[in-house]
Image (tube, rainbow, N blue to C red; front, side, top):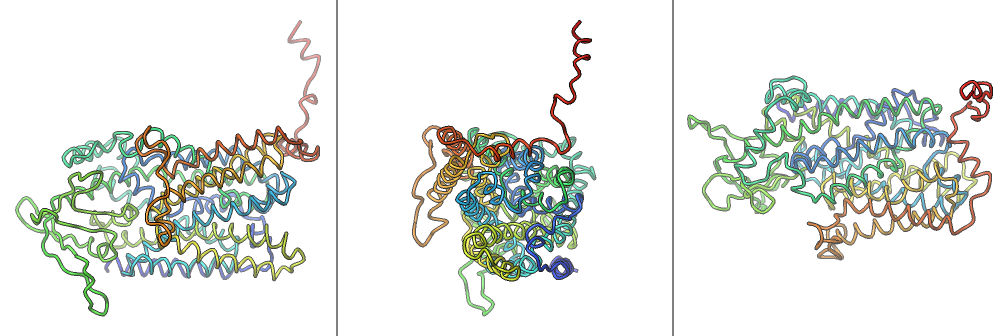
Length: 610
């Protein structure tokens, strides 16, 4: 069977499983809709958290960015992994002890202010819509490939599917769906990684082949031949300053992401929260340690297959009605040492959707990938498709190609559902119920929550269609916004009893406005193409460092601004009420512990100090 048939089979089976779980998990109470009733086992919550965490950005775009950028692309790997460790060890247990439904709930209680709750809810919506836009783009890419439709049509199809199981089951349905999706996506990533490792390095374990083989040297040699700097050379695509700032923004943004934080409220107690964090870290490591190997294999296969490929013929693209589109479809073949030609079939479907484009500029009948600026001379390849295309490039069996597409969908859909629930809870629970209709019935609350999910899907779908950047870049914007708005407030809310409501409100407002405004100004022509034909500003310090401070990095500056404003304003205004300060102290003390004096025996002290 062809890879397309296998894809239909796998996608159909997994979707029926997701929909069945969503139907069986349909809820009638808000506690189940928002936090799954607080009774999810630690291992299951760890798998769900990993699926929630390993989005289309991790599954599709991160590996593509590493493959395209080499050493510099690993900033995403390091930032996201380090950020999760920061969240799991430093914040999650304390947040669970506060016992609130949402991050705005925590902010409202800790900072004894409904205004702070409103600001936090608006920030959560802004962050989550930015994040989910990247997931919708990922869904669109997969659907466009195996349904052979444009990416925009694929995004719309994904919107409909996400809406069904997110609206129906809330957090309860999403959690158990994500448990299944984790195993789907991890199998979809590891199976081709293992196959490629055996093919290129002789080792079945990708990590061992990555470390012990000569694949690095072979890729670097290809780069030298094509005129690019070595794949393993640092700071060739990003300045050292941007690498540091982007990693800082990704780490602190991770620790402030509302859709990940809320997962620690779905377990029964603080102990379960700690265990689920540990399980999630283990599950995440399975993919994140394999991602650099997959990127390296993808880079090698792509360069060695396409560079020097012979142009067999060029057709003009047609619509389904037979009308000419003006698009050129290149039919290529590799030429063996004995002169035999082997057609390269896998490029055809990607060309139809404009995700790969060729242009034989010199007319010599051969595709050249030699350096032209920072790009390939005669090929344009969307970074986000590298993971999906790699099994086809390597000539792996059709069922492996299909399972990668199925895994990409699982990764994008799992995270999209969690993000949509955050948007829903922020508007329906933190805003509507508190300020519009506090006496609303359970049925009405659920109706409002579901309407908000539908509205959020429409907005996210728009951004998925216009594509303000590659999936990983769009998600980096979301992490920057989370770093600039939530991380300082959550961190200080736990560890600084003197931080008050005035400081928290000012810090969040300054952080989110500065970071969001900078991203919008630098990407105005992409985010709002109907209003702007070019960016409003160029990145700051462009004259001082190459490229200036990129939009993906600006969250680090926003985070630091938030910290400074919050601390300064808090010290210039009245301290929090005594009961709030005591709450902060109690949250940091493990349950059942005693004051240090209770363990102090003066006779022991005298014996130690005669």
